[in-house]
Image (spheres, rainbow, N blue to C red):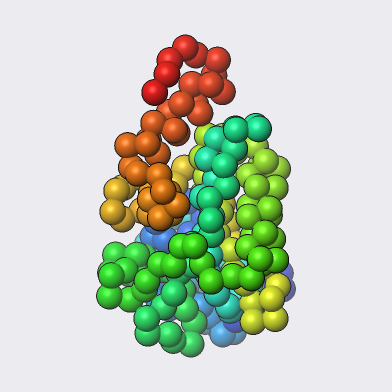
Length: 200
């Protein structure tokens, strides 16, 4: 049995500590009690051979924000909302959802937000990016509860850049930056940060 100590708030979501693209997060990733938690953690440790993160599950709307650049040149893109086409009890942006996104979700960017909500999400994304000393580009994920409270879920300091699939280039494109320009901007940010010559 896994070593599970401490107090947890249920429902809770279980995630492998060191995977990307939501690997290890399936539709059954949300647990209702300590028995389910113990079973899922034991299963995931057998499969992934690493520690698990256990977090309170936050219901609400899901947003992701792309951040590009360093220092005063940093750009925060418009938030993109992940909208479920077939809502269920626990909408989880899981690995299966990302693999079959055309059938299960749609992406809205710019998202339907009030001016205050939009400003809050974008300002918070920038503060998190700076506080964690991220460089060049990152993507920040949030949940917005029905009561209007914003929750920071996680930051991806090396987000995927697959054209036509990954969230970051999708956001950039919907904000007027095509794929070659995005890749050039990431490389240019890294060159400037490192003090290297070169212009893209």
